[in-house]
Image 1: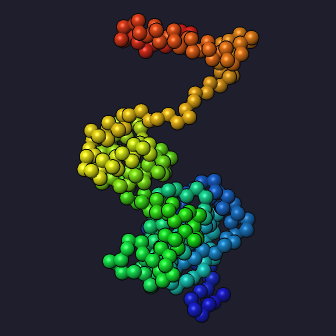
Image 2 (image 1 turned 90 degrees about the horizontal axis):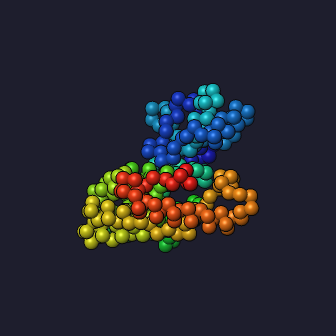
Image 3 (image 1 turned 180 degrees about the vertical axis):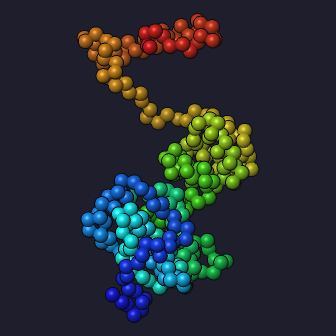
Length: 300
């Protein structure tokens, strides 16, 4: 196939001539989805061609298809079908991001970097405002760059802005977001702290084994803006007990039923457990400090 406008053709390109896209934000992981792709390629081959840009040295810069290339290599193939497009860096970046955003299990850090790359590519394209214009800028139809990105992505314009803010986080904090230990909303607030303040927060997280809630992150951001955020204020905020929202303790019935007569109802079990805990607490208060936290025999 050939298109006179883009000089686009489909070729079978050797895998060793396919170079990864510079700063490719999406990880290629050997997970269950990769194994499924490998099995599919072994049975049917690569059904959807990748997209690549020709380089002067005769190799090709892979724009879309990094996972398919990896799966092809695992499946024992030497080449894969590639749509060759002679396009500029901005167009290539937009295609690269759009072709990956519909995937499942994309990490927040991957989306953050991808959205930032696409935003910068759109702003560099013809018709974008100059460097002294508004930060995001608008095209001739009055749409912001983020609005354009949202048209072809699973996220809203405001959510895209939040993802882009994550790029301001120190790597250790961004990793905690990827691991689900820091939520999206507190992470955005933390991104407004200075790098030095973020490093102080990292030290506190490590020492206290706790991460900030949204309200704690908001307070840190406010104190940072006032020039009052330091290691002491960060520690003070982090030592505060987080507000328990709808917090309940559930005891599996199969684990506690053996300790009670069959005639006991769940309500009577609960009452008995609370009485035992009250008795245990009174014993701790009567014992010396060094014995205070021994478990009662009835609860061991």
